[in-house]
Length: 265
Image (cartoon, rainbow, N blue to C red; front, top):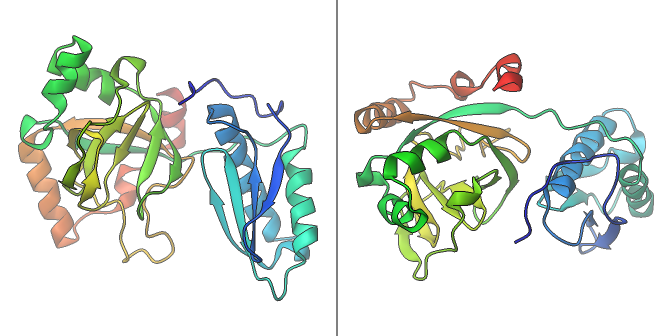
């Protein structure tokens, strides 16, 4: 996996490629490999398209906008949309010399790193030559950024992992990773929304659900482009928050960092 570099929205690293995805979607590929510059360009283009849909009739038949690491997939109604005009709009927007940067939402999420919910923490510390406390400190202080949602509903692939913590996936994946486990692999971090098989290294647990059907407009909490900060909590605090979640006595908005604070953190 390529290193994630500093962004430069105004200078595309390679010409964009427009690829058909069946007869009802375009995929616009902005880079041949994975890098932070391409991902931020994807987010900026997604923002521009969502804004343009509200005022440009030619984009009214776009049904979904799905950003990923280095490409943007745009779904449309094939019976109503002018696919060629939409494709040209995407190419023109992607080649624009000045793209408005994406303004992210920033969240502060609780993270418990007690060894009872962090079965790989001690092994990762040994592999890095750091103490468990140093690994927790290094990880929890790193600002992470959601590059895309994938693998399963609500699963965030997050960049910004400190290089010292980068490790290959486990040689033997687990058959069942507990829901809401926070984990690392390669140069990325994630939160498992559901219990599932998985081969990432488990460093802790977040008590908050990453996917809720009770939020029909945005069932997946984290979205591509969001930023995440951690607040390390105790095992008792983890249990208390999990109980609040079960009672429905919590709100996503309580964990949103104000934009002014996020800009200085």
